Amino acid sequence: NIIKIVDIPRGIVSERLISQRLDIFKENGFTIAAGGNLAAVEIARKKGFTVIADTGLNISSAQTVETFNNLGLKAAVLSSELTLNEANGINSQMPLGIIAYGNIPLMLFKNCPIKNGKDCRDCNKNSTLTDRMGIEFPARCRMGYSELLNSLPIWLADRKNEINLDFAVLYFTKETKERASEVITAYNNGTAPDVKHTRGLYYRGTV
Image 1 (cartoon, rainbow, N blue to C red):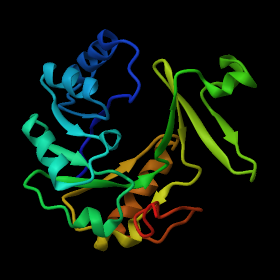
Image 2 (image 1 turned 120 degrees about the vertical axis):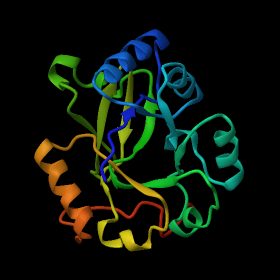
Image 3 (image 1 turned 135 degrees about the vertical axis):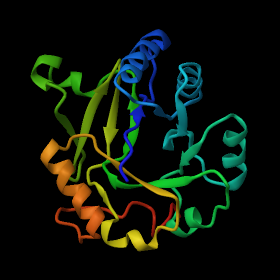
């Protein structure tokens, strides 16, 4: 089953603005919100949303799962820095999952790094930063902050049988509607990757 979730930005300039935006989503039938920081969690709870802990909270152990469970959260997306074995090994009565697809966020900027080379009109929220190896990293603006995304999407569709968790997140950022549909189909079918991709840290860890 596919569940639609409000993704609250990691950087919050105005709690009032986030609250107003959540009202709009609520009016359109959304009931679940993912928060990647404590401020987002509190705002969503006050608005009556079922709140999921996002990866920004860096949940990586049964103890941190229990802490957020006690705060009233109903599920958690585990840290992307865990290996798949580590994630699978966390015991909890609260539903747990991982990001199984997508260009995950790497860095959060208050000052947009793209502005050094082009203005907002030229950028049109569709720019990249290139490192010294020539690798391009997508950058996106989100309500007063900028995020640098990973250069390649995580792809685990063909490894989904190795994910022994309650759910998997398909994290869409720059995909078209058509591409998102293709990815959903691929994950339903367990299809091998059709693009350059990464397995993230799920098989190699951080060491």
